[in-house]
Length: 284
Image (tube, rainbow, N blue to C red; front, side, top):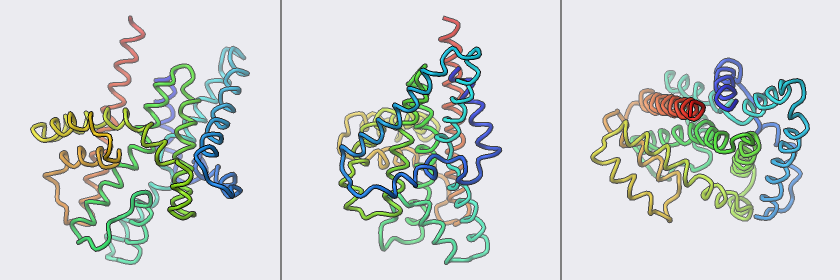
C-alpha cells in the first residue's frame, strides 16, 4: 500500500497542493504559537504526541470497511506531510521578479527560500545564486525525499514515522521564521533532525554522485560516510553541486531553474528505485 499511496499523494500534490491549505506546517502554527518554553524535552514530547495520534488512528481504522478509511487516512497524511506547498509559490514569485528585474521582490522571495540556512553576508552575485541553488535542493530534500524515506522505512506504520519527521520540519521552520536563533537552539530541533537526516542524506547523495561527475562526487560521498561534523545541508549540497558544476552560476533565472530541474530528476530516480524495490519485495 505504501507505493500506491505514494504515487497518489505525489499526483495530488502536483495538481492541487498550491498553497498552505494542505500543508502540515501551516496547520500546526496554532499549536506552535502557544509555546512559551523551548527545550529538547518539549520538542520530543510534542513529536511523540503527534506520532501517537496517528498511531491510534491507524489502530482504530485497521480492518474497518476493508481498510478503505485507513487508505484515505494514509493519503491525507501523505498529502499534509509531503510537498512544498507555499514554497512553490515563493519559487515562481522569485522567477517572475527576476524576469522583471525587480530586485526588491526578488530578494524578498529569495529570503523566503533560504529561510532555514540563510545566505552568508557579503557574498557576490555568483555565490548568492549558488546558495539559492543549495536552498532549493535542500527544500526538495526536506519536503519530498526525506518524507518519502521515512514513509517507506515505517512500513505498515509509515504514516506514523512520516508524521514525526514532518512535525519536526514544521517546528524548525516556524522557529526560523518567528523566533530567535537562541530559542531555536534551545529547542534542539536542529540536532534531532541532524541525526534523522544522516542516512537519507547519504542515500540521496548517492543519486547526485551518480548523475554528476563521478570522479569527484563518489570520493566525496565516501568521505561523507565518516563525516560527523559537517551539517547534513553541507553534505547534500556539496554532492549536488558536482551535478551542477557545468551549469551557469551567473544567470538569475537559469541558475535556480537548473537546481529545480536536477532536484526533479533526482526525485524521479528515487521514486523509480522505490517502486522497483517494492515490486521485487512483493514478488519475492
